[in-house]
Image (cartoon, rainbow, N blue to C red; front, side, top):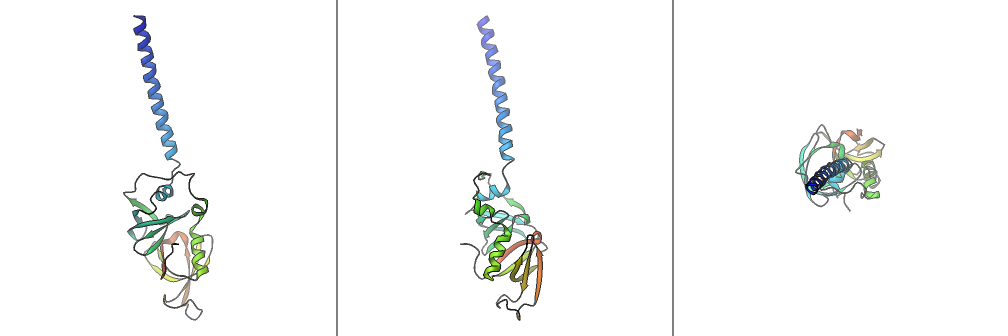
Length: 187
């Protein structure tokens, strides 16, 4: 009888320990998931098809080409920069994610302002669509911490002083997407 009581006690302890370990594993899993950002999930989808719901525009489906610190680049069929702040939802996003520690320092640190400064430096014509659905066509002139100044002009004309018909200062939080004309953003 004593052996049976000992084995019963040991089995009860093992069951209790198993439940405790399951709980600890669940807590650890939830804790690790709490560190995963939407950008970590998107980085795992680079080169795959995604459907993004964009504030003011609706759904846009395309191949995710790359991500930055606060933007993503879709081929849909034109290349489109979408600020992360304009992303409302993603449809059928797989649960895959890259580790929060594995994001590249350069790519992960490349912000929307850096992309816009590159377009300004190259004197690229862009179409900036705002979250209210209205679009502005022009060349980024100056890029601040939270705004871009656009020299508005006809897209087929160079942004010479005589061709600029107006200037617009756009808050970065008001941007739904940016398309570059006529060449793409990638490389």
